[in-house]
Length: 456
Image (cartoon, rainbow, N blue to C red; front, top):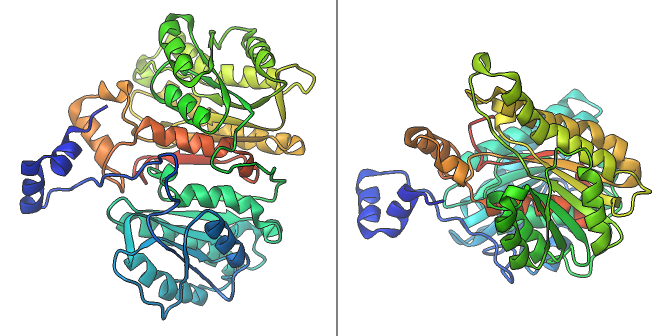
């Protein structure tokens, strides 16, 4: 969908002139991933406190991804606009006074960031600290990261990884999250803390195509975000089974033909939906590597005016079908079921965090998705299956194009990037969670909202 204002001030000569003369907000043009693209737009400055716990691992990850590393210190000087990213290993911070070292080291690097650059801080979970001051210091990283993210310009973003202490000696769990956050695949992900824990990380032949040889299922894939998820999964190497209702069969077939996938016309609320999906998977391969529960509906009405039919339909599609399909696919004896080490990704919404007028049923279902992944993650851990959710903010789709203009403009602009996201932004985040390398990420809800104020 088109963002007319952004196009006007970025592409129209008159619009550019007016924006400059009157100081109008100018949403940056975001760098999004294209095959073969470099990890970052310039060198990556990496600093650490007292040597850090994983600084050397961060250097290895960045260099093995083809980017140049420079040493970040309080005394370092950089050319303005030269850096593609600034990364700081803050895992060793234990006192409030230690934060001054982070400030002194990171500030010059942030000042030298170029367009669409990245800030990434690596901390360790506050809850794991043995002293209150250490916990306060690590929690402070979230406030620092969120504030930096709102100060950055020209499409730059800031995010935080809290790495579990038991993973310090096995930092390979960091590779996939670090590459995601530093790359243009996270173009619309900002202000997010992500917990990464110890896990067995499978080796892949090519980290740019980590789903090669795997089978993935995407529901609600006939158009919009679901179709884009299927495209990104195919680009990552997966054989994709796209699922949608029979009424969307023609569009679904077009998506399948475009990516060389398989179309499965199916009502996901049917009692045998999970079995039908497993049978389709079994015809393509032995087991399922990843399922994305993208299918969803809205039936907006003020809570006091809602009725059982409208309420029930939203709950049935958006959360109950997901639970039932998971229960079927998690049977280890089921041909075409989810394999050990598999991935489940639900699509939630910032509406489930902050709520929206007239969306109590939708918000209930999306908040339910978040509760589901948090509760199921420990239960699935023995099989090394991860379960996570994405919470999109304002994404440019056919649905949001129907929102009244004034409300739509507020939704677009009230975030650090001053624009709505694209379906591909959601797709890239989901593909990241589906990677074998994301084994250390489970029970998480990652927002794709441009560092939005809504739902904060």
